[in-house]
Structure formats: C-alpha cells, structure tokens
Length: 406
Image 1 (cartoon, helix red, strand yellow):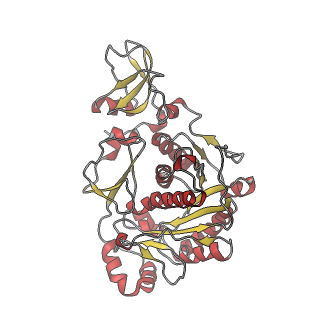
Image 2: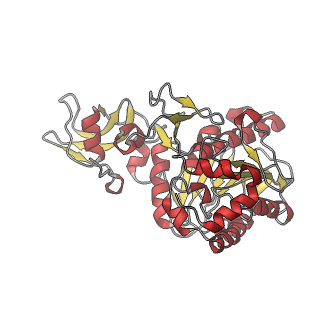
Image 3: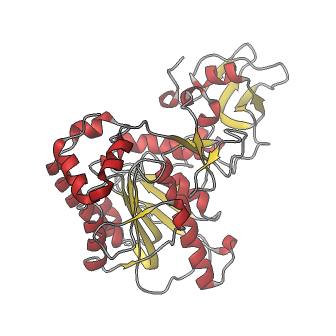
C-alpha cells in the first residue's frame, strides 16, 4: 500500500521512534473480528479467541463469507472491527459508575442514549448490549442512504427500545431533550481505515483533515447541548491525526465545558494514551493493538445525575425520517427479542432454504406448518415473515434486505 507522502510525514512527526513499527503494521492485512449478540444466543464462532476489551468480541483466523450465513441476518452477531468494540466496555463502565452513585440496581437504571452519528450501527449495538434492559436509545444518521442501512442492522439486532432517526445534529440541540449518554463517532478523514479501505488512502489530504475537524466541532457543539447534567459524552474517530483527535478533545473541555472522564483501561489491554495532551484520551494503533485505528475520549457534564423513575419516550426531532424502528414494518417486530413466539407459527429452515428465503426466493415448508402467516427461523433464531397458502409460500422478506450473493 502506497500511503500519501504528507500522511507519512505527519505520522512520523507524531510517533517519532514508533513510526517504523507503525508503517510496518500498516502493510499487514487487517484482522477479522465479530461481536456476539447477548440477547440472541447462538453457537456462532464458539472457541474463537476473545477480544481483550470486549467480553462478546472474538477474533477470527480467516474471513468467512458472512453474507451467506443466516445467523448474521438473524442478528446473532455483528461484523465489527475490534477497536470499535471499546464502546461496549465504555458504556458498561458508565452504567456501573451511575449505579454506584445512585445505589440503583441495574434493572432500575433507566438510561437514555443518543448515538448521533450511528450508521451502520456497530457502536449502537455494542452499547445496546452493554446497557440494562429498559434503556431507551435513539440512533441517528444524517445521510439518508446510510440511515436505511442503520435501520436494517438495528432491527436485526432485536432490541425493542430503539428509535432510528435521519436528522441533522442541530435538530437535537434545538429540540430541548437531553440524554444520559451521547455518543459521537464523528465523520472523519478515515486514516485508521487505510489498511482495509483503499478509498481512505485515495481521498486523504491535509485539506480533508481540516474540513473534518471543523465539521466535528460543529457536531460536538450540538451533541454537548443534549447531554443531561451528570451525563456523558463519548467522542471517537477512526483517524490518527492530532487535529481531529486531541485538539477536538481539548475543544470539548475548554469550549463546551465538559469534564474529562477516565474509563481506566487496564495496561494489559495495550491501548495507547494521547499525544501531546494532558487529557485521558486513548488511541488504538495497529502496531500496538489488534484492530484498526481509533481515537476515544469520554467527558461528563458537571451536575448531578437524576435517575428516571420510569421510561419516558424521547421527544424526537420533527422532520424527515424520525421513525421508531419497532413501529414499522412487521418484520422488525418479528426480529425483536420481545417477539411472542406464540403469536404465529415458526418454521425452522435448513441452510439452503434459509438462504433461499433471504434471497426472497420461493421456499417450502413441511405439511405440519399451518396455513397463514408463519415466521421463518434458522437454528432457532428468527429471520422474518412469510405466508403459507398451502400450494406455495409467499416470501415476505423485505425487498431491500434481500441478499444477492450465490
């Protein structure tokens, strides 16, 4: 991989004596990792090596054809870079801190979470698994096309208390509602993805870095306005440079008035600290940790956290695409972990029929399956609805979700 000369000069200046190790790591193939869904247990990847900083994350020795695994489409796991799985642990530690401060049991901790730049959904689903049932989550994505992908991934993950929105971050700032945890995985120059995405190499320039840093500060200002007293802001990027990382972390503290929060990661995890900063920020570097590049900083708004006695629906911003993913369409209800399996018959499919169903092709069911609406399943996990009319089965899997690979 031929990296841009100016990028190499920048990284040599940042890393000094570590630069040679960094560039050697950038020439190695990226690692493959998955995170299992705690609410949809399966035997997927049993025996694989665990990611140190995520109890449900695993490294794979090779990359399987994930598209042809029905368990992926059933929401049994999410294909995610290991570095990004740190959001699971950060969310757990925030919840633990709030429990200690309030004396509440996990089941009584009614949190409200906003993932402001959520697509495609990896960090949202990581936080879902880390936080107690009853947590209300808003997953927002500004780009409409990416919001559709986010909605599909959130629906398949199956957690019922999620709203997927398609809004500018300023709408949340103006809306007046506040959240206990706000995550901003900001649009960035993508330097941390150069090892796995050639486009990140091709698009890079110092001008792109500056544009991204400016946009990030705009989003962060809007995000900070939505953090409740005693609440937390999680800022992350998948890039290496100082402008989008440590400088923006200083902006959060110095301009937005939030206080640094140290999640206190163990030294044995091998997560690097910040560069030329006194802030407790963290860098996942490919020559140190197994994963792609990621920067992380956590902050807290001064004030007392006020426990919520019961769930209260977030007042979603008005405008395009502000939809609760579990309201429409029916397939999203079916994939929910709250789905009542007594509501409709469930037809268990083998691998070939499950893949045919996911391609939206004709499938067959046994004579024991009654006529009418049935729910297709693979290895006990639900895939979606169909209608058995006796002579054939009408496939009701969403058209825009169907797989095309053979």
